[in-house]
Length: 219
Image (cartoon, rainbow, N blue to C red; front, side, top):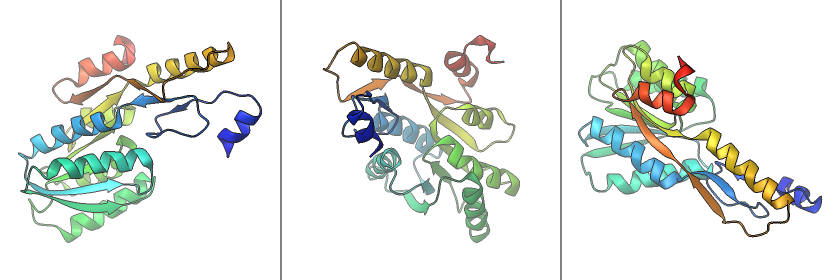
């Protein structure tokens, strides 16, 4: 309804990081959700030697989150020793923390939880906090976005967070703005989707990755 209203008023609309095309929008700008999911999944699965019980934290119904989850489900078919456990939740780190605390209590034996897959950094931060408080250092966590929360979790001592996929947010905004300006000048032909750069960040490259994302003055 919002896009239709804008279109009726002659206002060009560009969506960013929705993970799907929106009727009436000129284009969708963002990272390739499928590719980012593959990168994150590979980083997490390799950290647990492609085996164990992985708890999947996501918000049902969100298009890009559902895409990320579907890629995980497809990939683990090649690794029969990986067992997925769904943890549907809401866009609330506090709720995720409470859910993770319950899961940890129900699975108190070390090794009973191998990893936590998070749909995005902020969402899974609640699970990371619960795992840290429980002292379960054997559990690995990864997600997508590469925001400041993600980097903070990677840099924290004894953090279970092992990887994130960084999105080039400034470039996403730049391309979205360029598209709107072009439309205002009369341009009518735009691709349905414009993909931007994304890369994996782990403990091994976290400093270089932060400087790539925000510049050397980030520190």
